[in-house]
Length: 391
Image 1 (cartoon, rainbow, N blue to C red):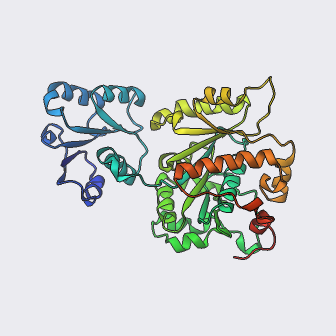
Image 2 (cartoon, helix red, strand yellow):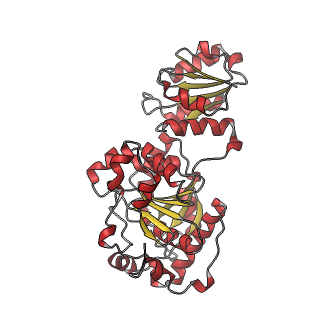
Image 3 (tube, rainbow, N blue to C red):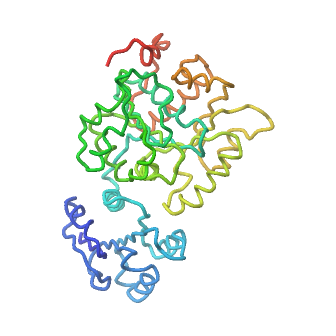
């Protein structure tokens, strides 16, 4: 298979060649000169969507039976990306959404051409909030804890948001470390798996990478840094769970949206998170070519009240598949922040059942072995997060 990149940017050239799947990979600044190739990867920075439509009309026969990819950017003028995607789909052209890293573009192209290759980050699960204060950190850390409890796997919990968390782990003085300690190496692309592991808070088989503490630096974290963290993490963790928060303008959050294969949205029955998420969907998801159907939904702080939407109605409103409905527990959430431990430690059966339901669902998605330990290994949570621990 011969691949021609129609672009002024040579960054894709060597990575595509290095895959070893293609007979020839070359680059051209002229689409008409590239029509002899089997696969075309076209940049919208060089060939506008109107020019592409015009050339497609003139060379329809040459486009037939070719695989054509069209790379969009955030600078498409007055025409919405969604409309451009519709135009391309009508011509059997596959759109590569904007804000992808080079590696993600390579993966996108190779997965479309060779779907049997499988996908990267297949063991990555991400939790996002419909808005702030819906309990994303509580849910994601509780799920990470219970998966660690019920498996022998090494679980990495990445807190990649601006929450200054985690709020639910008691730290020793020597554990006051976060991603800030490795940001220079991360930005310079010299971070090692060992250094990443040393920066995590360890509780038995659960390893927690704490969020950035210095908020002005948040703008320096970009999607490619998420990709690097996941690549390094894949060498040391069996499963990676991410608390991505609800700040969808951050490079970290966008990177997680792009990289995670399994995505969960955490919300409540309140109207405010739903209205906020509708803005995110219309302003960000459409630009990134993301669909709500890519997400499972968790209705947190759930109230069984006839005056409120039930779980099915909430899932229908968000156009997502319902995963779980952890209950509202009055002031226990505040107490959990004070005690620095998740609600799993409060012996609330309904909450634990909903978190365990989510954990089993994730284990099924990841195709990993999950077992319920014998009546639950009394004191496991204290062993995992109490004062007496090692490592």
